[in-house]
Length: 617
Image 1: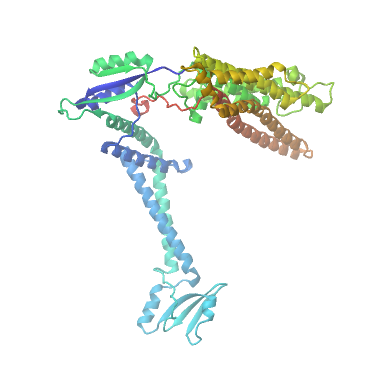
Image 2 (image 1 turned 180 degrees about the horizontal axis):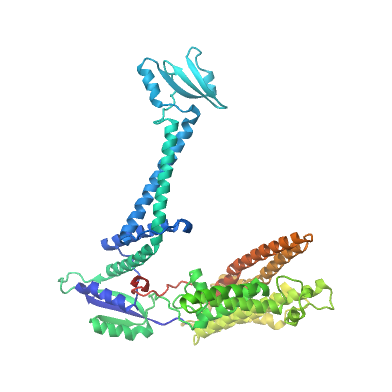
């Protein structure tokens, strides 16, 4: 559930601003209002934090196998400075190395010579000028020019001109060093880079020191931002100036805040959030529901303060979607075993199973149940399953032996599609039931009731158009449910006060968007067929790999190659199915279902101004 919030405004003497903020941070219950502020102290802290994060990024890029133990650096600041200095030195050496390599490539065709030799010859009266000319230009030179050709390729001619320079042509720029000296310097630079990397690797073992420093700087930045956010009375004597700041606290923390205010002699105001306020969202759920939170954390989604907490319904439907998309009880067993392994391994450190592991245990169990009731075990044919596994298959998903195999398979697939539409309709109806409950006692609740009726009517239309017109004729009451539901929506959608008939006209002014939303509801129900389609695609891929393994020639080669194909094939299929869960299973909850709830996921997570435990180590 979303915890109710209270808005608090805290007033203190300006001279006590720092001590009051320290006490407020120690209290750790107030989520401060976000403001765009700046100050010299805040800028300095942010600069230090940026440097620390840059140093952390540098050390994290070092391969674990290269990290070596070394004596601890005196403090985090020294470590960060040393890492950044080494990184800058490495960057400079790499730039110089690239420049030297480019220069070596430029002079390599001329061979190895000392650039100073030509200057010495010139002093002795012998002028030798090197040129690198295009062949077409070289062919047009005056034959009277004395020259020595050194090399010729497809496009260039390298030559030495004796005496005067060639008019309108630039001589070849002599290098600073000979090719051999340049090669030696390149090797030295490479060695310097290796030495720098070794020094960085020796510092990487202290990466935790920088991580703790970043968390400390984050707290300092938060403190300085809060300090800069506090407004101060103007034209007041320094000793009498007051500062104030606003934020939000969970309603059940109001007593704790009041006791602290009494202890520190703060003046305060506590009230309910106003219409223009944007309180943060704090979701609290029992442990058995909280296991879904890792999904929301992964997606980075937070419901708005005035929106719904759909954790419970999300968990129920997502478990079902996961099971149907993975679709295979054998895969479910593998996920269950892996979850137990990592869960028990993590429990040795923390003493409990992580929420993510508990979620995977639930999802894998749901997958095993779904795969068992439709007879899917590593995509093996139904007739090849042991009798005890066949007995677990429920009648709607059990092939009828009296029918031809293709017809029996078609009926099973139709039953699964039918189930997909039932699930979709139930979820969308549940969304509108929540909307009705929220809208009561307003007349707009009837608008949600009308939309609910329309969704139920569209369900019968979907069965007729998508599955089988003969087996699923559209009942006459379904048309009345669709038309009557849409009409009811138009009548009551804007009944939020004022003239009843004027509100109806106001609602009809939005006829086109509403009509398109009604059409969208039809496509939303159809969208749930993706549960069948993705599951079927996974089954087909697994079946193909089984066929490849079974079709190999006999002998030990068949066993080894078959095992490799099955391991790779089913592993790849499981990975793609897991990706499909993210794409399709999450989508049905976050778009179709949440869309009918009217959710925008516009919330800000409750993050109190507090001392973080990690910095107290």
